Image (cartoon, rainbow, N blue to C red; front, top):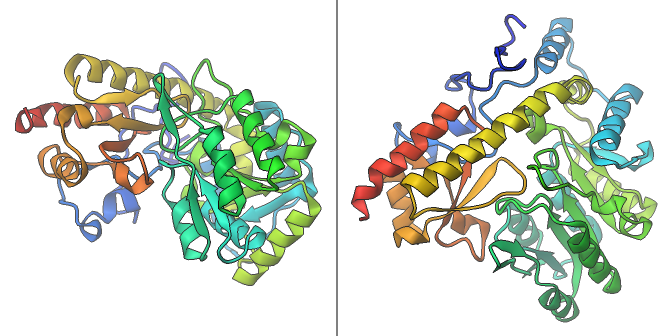
Length: 403
């Protein structure tokens, strides 16, 4: 599609090897290095947006909307809901109803709203560190008590500690559980059995669940994303399911998320809290992009998933053959890689200094994800393979400073 920034490949419809210069577009990833204290030469692989152009149909839809020339208040109509409905049904085997849908500028915004809607000051809100850092922030910022049911590393993968979860729910007045599925940053895609155990534990203790499923379209072969609320009616009636087209189609800056709340009392409480924020309408361009993405982005996503699998294979092989001191925690989903650097005998500030000053890389420091993050870093592989080659090559070149 000429003029959209989308380039096509001889191997498939889309060319994900295309290097797109994002500098000068006011993107956080590339244009605000100095503000974050980073040197100009650094290669950023941190914040979770991708360096790929959105599907051409999305771009063209935005162009057409821009040409209309009027950008007034907007709302999503039947066409938007039908696109979302069809996506959830065909890709996630979940039949959603229109009355369940509450739109939000973003999932973190929705989680913060849920914390205020379903808990009171001082109540316990459970998270599972190491986890996406805004979870702990919204709990603490709203004067709730963060209860950390840390994940356990066992037999080469992270698991949930259900015995400790049960005990903590009894002792810490837990009223809300924030689930991350697929899990960011460790990459777990929770199984049906794990989700059932979680749902039953929460049900026994009257704990509501907010399920952040924003990465649900990024699942690697051999694994399946299960919508918790779609498993049983009783789980649906205690769960807020947070979804968005933002990660899937790389349109996070357009700020539209789809929050599903089947329970009418919970939905009303959520809406009332939402009204207090004054966030009434959704970005018109986000609605346009979201609908176009869900209607026409399927092939783009399928090709992207193949490309990301290739990126994962490349990183795994490179680490095994040339960087044995750095261990890949094998992901089951997401395009974010959780890397264990403890084999280099670097942790904390020493690891951060080595990555930035010696390797010239900007990754997410594992410590920001809470308990269990020391000695780890998160790498975003949602980029052209040449960018990954450059990043891993920089790590290899910097090894001499720690050997």
